[in-house]
Length: 207
Image (cartoon, rainbow, N blue to C red; front, side, top):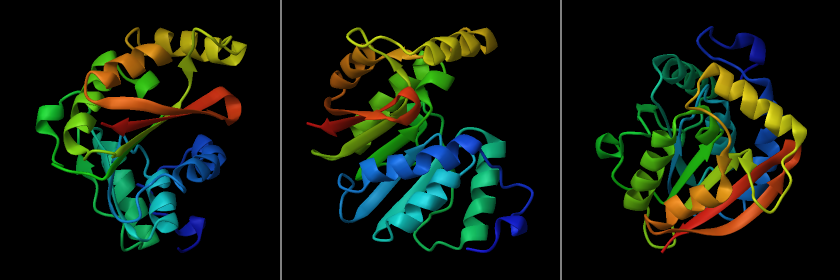
């Protein structure tokens, strides 16, 4: 990969990605399949896609997003990185699973989408993941959640208020509600992994 100073102007960057990509990688390393296709939903700027594709050269990594600016950023990062197993980005609206351009994936990954989108996006994510994953296939989610059995960090409560002020349809989701929705699509919550900065990784498996 060439120097960051050589990045094309379309390639967006996020400080949070620099902070969380390594902890997320440590979660994914022992859990992603040995080969196959990983479908990333709401890939945003594309920095995670570049980092994870390089870390898993045996996997095909397909980034997707619904936002044209994000898709342009992903494409710019992909061209900059030259990682052969990082596939071209596709437009995918998580809330419209009937229109997903991917019919099958061995794993689905979604980072920081659920709380920065309407609940319909989570519903669509579970519908789509339940359809494209094979038995035993993995759905990996990362982000902050509300939990009935765990006190919510003040910073997460403040973040939730901030999100809802930006868009009343956004906000931190209840972990149990997400798990219950997933279960209706044959996705069982297999692991809850505490992450830095009061985030969680939730690992689901297709039954």
